[in-house]
Length: 100
Length: 433
Image (cartoon, rainbow over all chains, first blue to last red):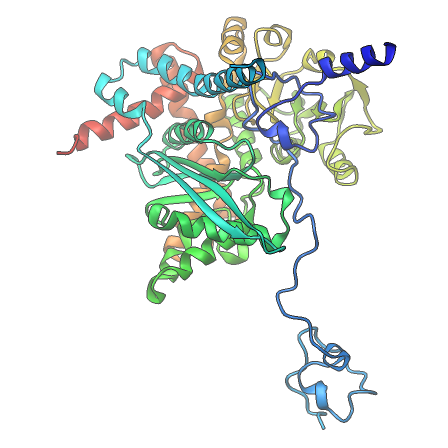
């Protein structure tokens, strides 16, 4: 009986705000006075979006083989590819005087 | 009707009433005072176009989800429709209508050649990954089609939308244009990333505008900002920029409040130091070690020269207005004072720089971005600031003079300025046919 009363009290005091507060990350702990009858439409403190929830989807399909992942552009079939120490851009090397 | 359904219907009815209430009460007050032509009043009381689009988007897991998007165009007598796009579950036609109407007044008050519009998608963008969000944005842009355009209706960021989303809208819109017209259409959206045609100075524009209007008020009232005390509600973009820009004037920040609570230091808080602290503390002021925590009531009762509400609506009300002990309220937020609060401030002789003027820096720099794109120019920060200053000072003076002429509060005066401009244009152009 006691547990039930506590639950009911909790339910009764739960306030659900509309407007921006309905999805604001800060709504639960927010100290600003608000009214359930007046949904907030503007709030400079609103935080609901911090970029994508999941990691960005790669735009380019994954290369099929390990070789393709490691070596891009000219390096893919360069004779020097396994011992080359040149720093390489992420997009691959497309001009190289050392290419063999 | 069962109880649950009735309660839901009543809540919705209350929500509609309050949304409209905020926008229409001020309009009616100003229209009555200035004796606005009743025929023009009829026109301004309605929105011009309301576009609702339902569109499908394929999700990453292969499902197709249907979305509802809105674009409400209130008025374009003074220039192309202009207003933000928000992505939020609470977006509905009533809310968008009210916000579009507000945009018409805001542009007219600071005399920028834009009308009013607003739009959005009813969704919680946080539920989607970036690729899905991009597709939702692009499909919405495609669905809107020629209902937006660089010389017709120019969207901008709002709640849950950002420069990246504007860049997607831009790219999608340009893709639907003939190749030789694309470069001339970059101003279809504002709030773009700087590299994609955005304007420098947009981030601090609203806070900068707040400070410019405070400067003007100080000059008019022979009030020295050096040593002046103030407190700020909200330490997000507007509140923190306004505080940091007041620092070179020698003004002293006594208290700050955000969603995490209120802090107070009678000797002053360094706005830059507080900003650095918030950057390491999830953007929140709570726990700042160089100030003591205070409750909301004590915060509002802070004895200072200026109060800058820069967070949310309805903070200065019948209950809280009597507790304020300041000379000036500079409204960085939208709608922080309700009509009852306004009356009390007026009776107490507290000056108010109304939101539609005080926080107009953002929309003004959006206009500058639009202009730069149109002219293929790129202004430096000094040029943006100089022009923003000139625009806001002119707007300030017009509102000040109108308040004196009509013997009304500054908010009503601001609305009178806006309505007078619209009335003049309608009278000059007449009603077709």
